[in-house]
Image (cartoon, rainbow, N blue to C red; front, side, top):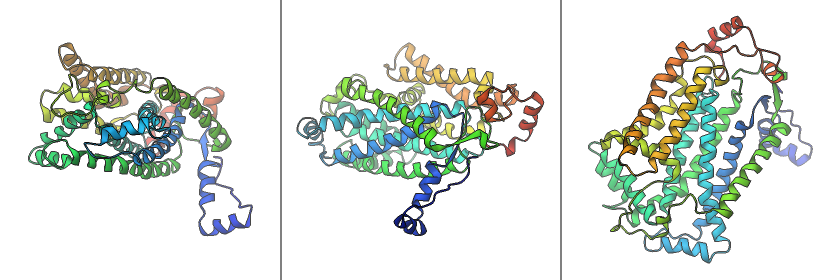
Length: 426
């Protein structure tokens, strides 16, 4: 490993602070000298991108809140006021609205990278669980933010999604009325959603701190899925990974800016530019694109309660991947059958997203049911069984060997490592 922090304060003020609040030493040990596996590829840069996006969303959101009016008769016009009258208000709103989509693009790549390389396995189970908590908080925050413009899709989306809670036996209607603040989506609902939308990003920031803390205990996983054995296997975070992450962030921001400046409304729904009217139902109510796979699962179950259970189970099951996956090998690079199953799972998620955007009729319903069935079969059947019956490829002897191409360890060595899997780091 690259070793612990060697931070030495250079000024009297820094030495004074370090003896009382060693924050500079903490930053140095966590983000400068911290050792990382030397074979990390660009998929590992999305954690830093997500941290940047969280800060950007909080900064733009707080600024927008200074001009927004959370009142049902004024909310829609206050958004128009921001767009037309506030200096650079149009830019703030487009950066914030498209930032939500960029946030979810980055988090989906981050999650699928973790699934492909087995980053959820021991000893990183808590890291993975905290990531799922962040994802759930993101979904709640994004949904509540989508309601705030108080357009047709905002109001009716809130009506449809909150009505799902009425399917809960015994307490469902009471929970729904509490969410609404009355007997329909109205001003009290808007106030509740605005308050929670403002609060939840700070909760996300708190869990992110725990997430980073949990990462720094075992260190990062890597494409080979083996733990560093010597200093040859690692590099300090700075300058190697700061430069790499910085380059990735710039590329991502170019993509982000393209949406903001050239197609800012591409990911929005046209009906949301009409003020919410509870007496006029849109022809086709759809949530934001990042909810569509789970929306398709919800609609694929004929029973309302069953659909709600299936939708939430589809997310909760991801939290149990460390225990559903029975293989002792982490990286799909050395698991040929699992790699094929993984790409089928990715395709299934994409197709579920497409089905969720279509009207629930005809062949779309049948396709949604088949795709939903495969989603659960993959997590509950294929992943556990592959771990028991798949024959993985031999692992490299070390990360340095994987990087420098010195060959792989023998099958006997791999088998020995597999037998000692309880002590293997995830």
